[in-house]
Length: 218
Image 1 (cartoon, rainbow, N blue to C red):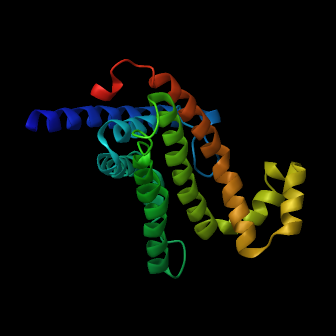
Image 2: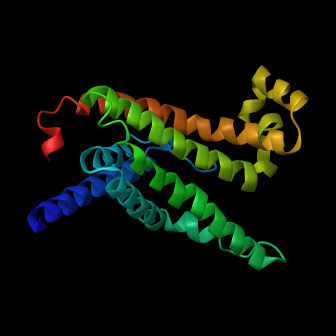
């Protein structure tokens, strides 16, 4: 029993390190980074899905939580900037900073630990593929929620003054939505610019990884 748990810990640590490394390398590639945060990574979340798929949802959620802490450590410059006083209501900004960390890091990445949810319901390939799509979609929704609540003030600028203004869709959005609706659409679009490609890349990579012989026995 101890040997089995040690093996799980070692394998999980290696996969977490791999995911963190892929994320770090991806952030060093300029065209994969969005201007206000968010990176299209080279399937950096797939290792989390694999942990959940191999060892169960409880273990996967724990690994996801650890990964969220690693991401905060790797992105310390961005995280620390959230706590810089930028208004007369500094305590309010600290509260918002903690809420952003909760949604964008802890809940978003911990939810990827649900990637193994289809293991006992499907064969290896579809289980990993659909598990990846499901888990990363949850991650996307947490990012959308955070963006709509805390970054919605950028919505009007995004659709009228940024590069997005050249699309007819932007004009339609500005004519159709206001307030919270506009903020939500902005967050869906902005976060979708990196999360939707991420979901596709991860699903494709999951399909390839599922062909590794004896994966369940690792």
